[in-house]
Length: 230
Image (cartoon, rainbow, N blue to C red; front, side, top):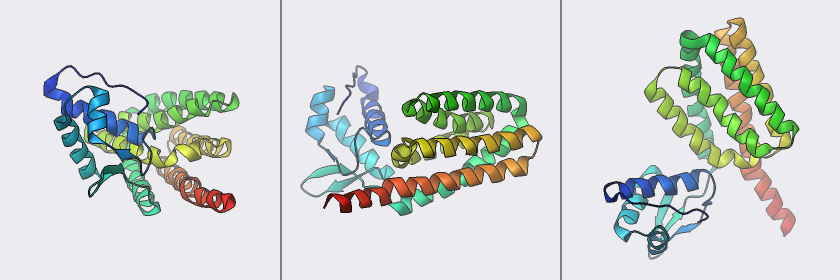
């Protein structure tokens, strides 16, 4: 692991270990098929193996890791079917979030999305794709936050974080980044016009393109590279 976790409150050790490992899996620092060795994790964190074991059980329940007999745990490999499921669910959840945000906070929504898009274009123009990745997530976060629905926000955040595990590679392509920004612009334009149905259609179209780019980069391109390497 590339980071260290400092834990002092014994009551919340399991939760902190769980959050720490979950974050590293979702942002790609611990990759697919990588082994998670209980004793090693406990040693690196500086805690007993019990909270680590409990955290690993929780991650297995979430479907992020899997138990391998006589081996321990490893991060589950990503599948195209799971990616499709995530994006379909995002379309439903974020579509509702957009409708509520337009109803409750349209002027603020327009201002924040416009600023986000301007910053995204600046990051891509100067070649900072890492900076764009953060702003891409913030675009969707703005919509979910301004929806006013706490549970809706939690669902949207969870799905988006799972999606990022698949999408990081595609977002690091300038072409994909520019397509994403164009999708964001179409959503914003419809919101500004008061065309809520058009905004929803634009968002669905943007997420559909995002799904296609993800499937192409996360799965097909890897297969192509493997064939080229042999």
